[in-house]
Length: 230
Ligand SMILES: NC(=O)c1ccc[n+]([C@@H]2O[C@H](COP(=O)([O-])OP(=O)(O)OC[C@H]3O[C@@H](n4cnc5c(N)ncnc54)[C@H](OP(=O)(O)O)[C@@H]3O)[C@@H](O)[C@H]2O)c1
Image (tube, rainbow, N blue to C red):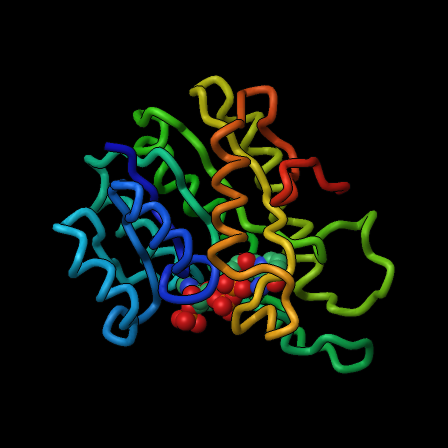
């Protein structure tokens, strides 16, 4: 049975990924900060016959990531999905909150590398061997035509660099590592104006995952299946 581990699986795109993999019969390790408040995930787990389990994980907490890696050390994880993310608390010039920027980096950037280090063995022994980081068009330097959002933009550009280096470092172990642009998605973060539902965005990204080969590793993929400019 294939397995996915998803961070921030309690709402938005992460929840849609969890529901989609569960529907297809996958084993799902659904992680979120506060399981007691994750009602939708609870429902999914309760109806899954044990295939979906919910695990507490704050990705800003490196010790918690390592502890979960240890607890799940015997598992095989086909898709490691770094989805958890936070938006920019001080989006415009002159209002920068530097402490908050550090937190954005811990969640959006450093967590993906910590997860890779904690779960590399589980991914390496799996069938699909994929690590994906959910980035954003706002992390594209080429696509930045409007400025601002210093914390969010830089955290996602740096996430893309993490995935690129992982692609090279882990290629000898057969692991593919990619950054994804999920589109503008109707979630708490994306707001009601988004052009995609979380379900459609997750479905499209899974279709991209299904076609990836080792030659596609280290790239930044749009949900449409095209490469997105760095
Ligand atoms: N929506 C869009 O249009 C869009 C566009 C481009 C990229 N993205 C990216 O897609 C990913 C998912 O976004 P979304 O739209 O689904 O956002 P969302 O609805 O705001 O959900 C964000 C998720 O991240 C979790 N999270 C935040 N901080 C965390 C932490 N320290 N530890 C663990 N989980 C944490 C949240 O958990 P809590 O419920 O505990 O806060 C929640 O599950 C993010 O990486 C985002 O940057 C979204």
